Length: 131
Image (cartoon, rainbow, N blue to C red):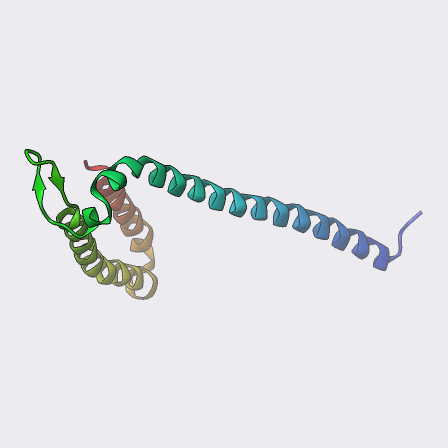
């Protein structure tokens, strides 16, 4: 007994629709899980900072004094330093990364693409692991 061509095709589409629905469900679950975990991290950070905020108030974020003797602390200097160094790092790294990407995809000779790509990947992984 052979099936009509339309029936085989319908079965294949039905199987694909089922696997697509399963994949969509797993992806949606993973997305919600990420949001729940991020919310948990934010709640943990807020709860952990409760003592500092109740002791120093919101002035903690706007003051730059750091005097352990008088127990007056402010976080503006470390926050400002972090923001500036991160911005400078992005300002330097973004053009370099884009340049390497454009070179590898558009200008690099085909036999050299893979070795250079692997070398760049290993160098960036090494930079990420240096303490």
